[in-house]
Length: 169
Image: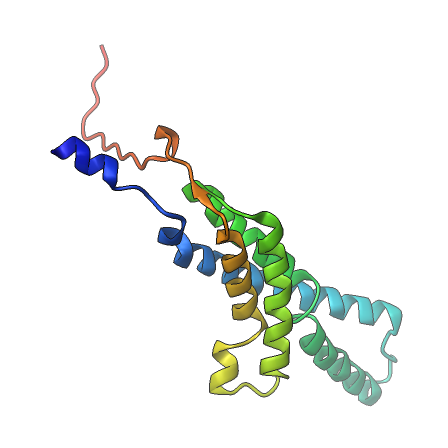
């Protein structure tokens, strides 16, 4: 009876969906930060701010605001979200659809931009939940799990080993 019961219990890709989503959110946050700094450095290189103090502050503020609007929303976050979801799936042995995960992260980012608007500068309760970061992670997670399978080998079975005492002769 015990053997039959173990054979019936199998992991499904949906068992790891929360882990994949959370890794995707972390990837989007890191990607958003990288997007902000990449946009800021690019704008600063293309159009350097004047050295005079009042004009420099206004220029730096403008560059920062543009970077806050563009950086966390476009470019790097969808790719970083896709990598986070794929990494989580690989860690637990889920073989998912990488192409749909990447497409889902792009579509999710665009939906988040359309729904949340300028969520970075004027956040609302709704935009803190539905924004390009969370929507990209959701899209990548859904795309990754379409047609996904879980490896059922011993290699991915969780094993724990605790050594209390070890004596060698």
